[in-house]
Length: 247
Image (cartoon, rainbow, N blue to C red; front, top):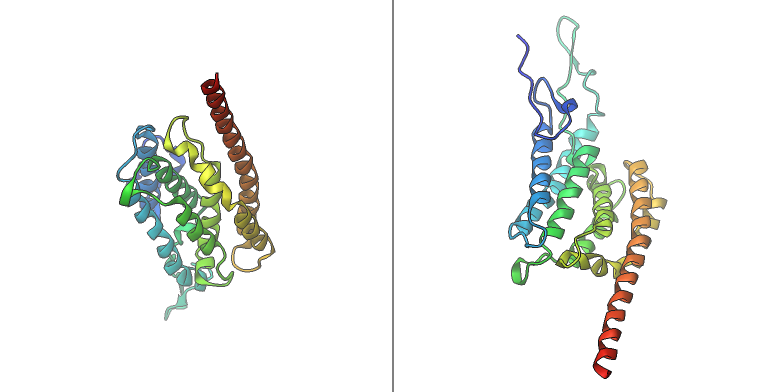
C-alpha cells in the first residue's frame, strides 16, 4: 500500500503534506513550530529561553557549511549513478540540502533568530543578548570568501538576510525591543560597505546573495531614518520636560 501521508504542522499550508519523509522535512516543521511559539510569547515579558534558543539556531550555520561539499560535489544529480552488471543505472541517493540553501528553511530561520532578539531584549546580566556583537559576527560571515564552503552552504546569504530582518524589526512601543533599531543604526556605514562588496562579488549562489545585499542596503537606509526620528522624539520630550521645570 501507499505510505501514510505526513500531516503538516497546524496552520501550515496543505501543500507541505508529503507521502514520505524527505530531507529537512522535520527541520522545517520544528522551525515553523518554534516561530509560532516565539510569536505567541508575551511581548512585554522577556523570554528567558531566548539566548539558549538563539545558540541552537546559530548551530545551523555550521551544519549548513558541513553539508555543502557533499551537496555541491554531487552536482545535485540523482539520476546519473553507477551501472550494475545488467547495464541498469543505479540512481545516487539524494544528498541532504544545506539548510541555508533552502529558501523556506532560511526564511524560517531568519524569523526565529529575529524573534529571539526581540523577545530577549529585556534580559540583563549574563543572559542578555548582545545584538551589537551579533551584527558584527553576521557581517564577518557575510564577507567570507565567495568560493568557500560557507558561501556554498548559503551562510553568507543567511547572514545578510538576518541583518536585514533585524533592521526591519518592529516591536511594540514601551518594550525594550522598541530601541533595537537605535542599537543597530550606528552600524549603517559598515553594513552599506558590506552590501557594496556583496554586489560586486562573484562566486557560489551570487544571484540570491546580491539580492539579499540590495534588500539589506534598503533596510539599512530605512532603519537609519527610523532611528533618527526616534532620537528626535526623545529630544523633544526632554526639552518639554526642561521647559516644564523652568516654568
